[in-house]
Image 1 (cartoon, rainbow, N blue to C red):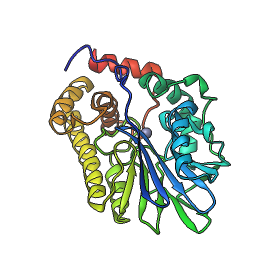
Image 2: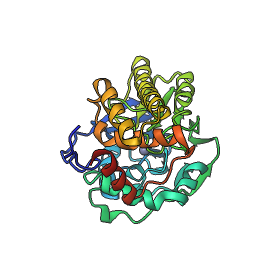
Image 3: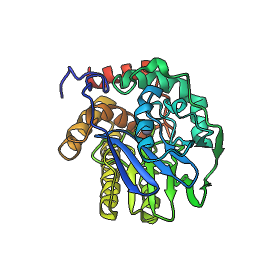
Image 4: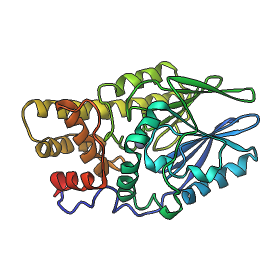
Length: 318
Ligand SMILES: [Zn+2]
């Protein structure tokens, strides 16, 4: 463990290569080597975008790619959850509706402002042209549990299958094609961020995703999963990381170790298997902090502020 590890992703400044993959006539994935993904659904009469990129300027590249495959209006923006790096580009799409679960809206009310400031400092490269962000992104439509959109004849389900990455996690599901946009509930070759997670629930939510037997899936980060085998692999990888991390932290917290020691041991223990995934060094301090909280005395994630971020980093990495 080095003492000169830069805070979060502040040292991560190299541009990533964008891929725009076609999953079906109705679904596309905008991915960029482990940066936050955007999923696109094209119906008969409208386009739906799930997760927006971090700023309106960053979102322009998504819109440019969409316009290469369709000229239908972008009518819906879906927020899979509240994290700034995925939602603050929403204004670029000029959508009629911005849709989120009520749980996600509650989190925006409670911690959106703090999260925005915290995430902007964590990811300087992703918040390119941060001055183009007009403020928090507010849903215009909210739902509990499940809702269905009809894009002409194309049925699109928005579903809360359980808590995991956050309290408000929503997946986008095309029943006719068994294609899913999972948000950060599933990652592929990228370290799951679990700073706002529910560790006990997350594996059950992955079970609920698996039970739908998706044929293809756009994860929150990493390449689009283009076969059922790849989807199973993505689910298994995510589950293994979450379970291994929580087991290690729970064990050491129960043994009375302090957070710094729990962190150092979990970091080393998980590094051989997961250390090559993108943002491993960024995520681990946040993930272990939250796991330690949940294993001890905080059933719900505490709010991260820019200041709490830095204090935690100093405590664990300083
Ligand atoms: Zn997230």
